[in-house]
Length: 483
Ligand code: NAD
Image (tube, rainbow, N blue to C red; front, side, top):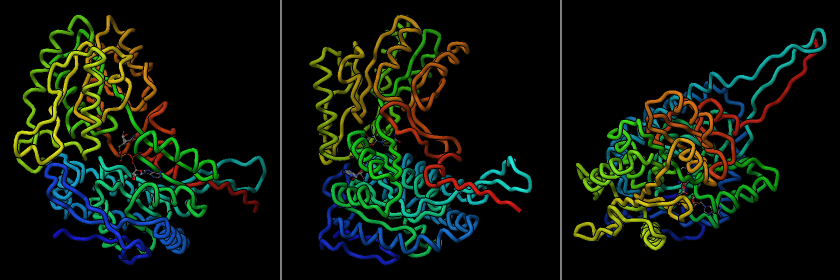
């Protein structure tokens, strides 16, 4: 029997008013139910919003350094429980245990970083036009904010939204993705144990259509930070900003790696495999287009295919496994459909391209890491986000053409170039339309102390992480003080 987990509303762990739960299934072994979670309703979400609104004034008055101390204490608890949290993460999400441990360690860093932000939440003092006048600004919290997260980074993404929201003095209603709610719950438990007052962080599991929609529509919620698909994010943004609240959306990508003729090809292959395949390609920053100079196309392709064919796919809890399953049956089918689309479009299947069903893989949603050659940038596999272990190789005649192909997409999250020519590297950094640029490093990866986010359809603009993260969760007040 799997355990049944509850919502946290106003500091109480409670069942949903629906009386119903849903199963959280291990995608590597679908016979295992990792846990059952509350199938919450809009009424549950409303109760959580009310609890947050009640807790918000006292939390706002709590000095920011004190708020930061609670985040730091939560960091120590997550650190203490790291192995256990990571194992649960692998069971519910499928990524390998080393990846899950790395992500959990990242959450520790995030709480530590934003804990210190409690001592740095400064405004500015500015000379006034008038004598004997003190002119200054302060950052004030929005009040109640909603946090809606995807399943692919179930500890890091909640951490990088919740930490700045709390340190800035907001009360939070947190709705995690239904495919990975256990890891999200561990974040809430850590903050509870760290001494966060009741009602400051509320946790409500359930569907986007019930819980998410209530957060979006409820006038008490002054800001929503969302990460997920661009279909949901686009709609949410219109709705939330339409009623005058703030909305931050981090969405999809179609991230290129450009491989120039002077690149270290072994390094380029390793960066491509890292970006495209690790975490089963289920990263918003995953590499999905390898744009390769014709002079090195054959050599790069040969090395990439050889490297991809060696990848060990399986249950992420097993040692040596490098790529786990797709998150669920829908995502598995999406990946398999795109593989069919790629073949029909005339791309050449060079590696993988099928579901893996040899026992024990038949118990999970496994796809062989897949490489397509002869891809052109107008193909759907080069334009639409697949979110699986699939990469397409596109040939380019020179730097200008490679750059044009890289920019020919509606997304703009992350981009990478492999070259030893420093001028070309800088030219790429200047002209690529992406929120994050990597030179001789993979399209994936995010350090907490710098902004994270995309351009074009990947993001609504306001950045997460780094010092700017608190900007979304605060409003600036200007004070004129004549003495
Ligand atoms: P999703 O859009 O299906 O769901 C994201 C969250 O939104 C979930 O919690 C879901 O329940 C909720 N939701 C669904 N419908 C809603 C509605 N009508 N109102 C409010 N909330 C609703 O995305 P997913 O499948 O969980 O995650 C994968 C996607 O996330 C990919 O597109 C990926 O690129 C993106 N992603 C982006 C980033 C980034 O920072 N740019 C990071 C990770 C993942």
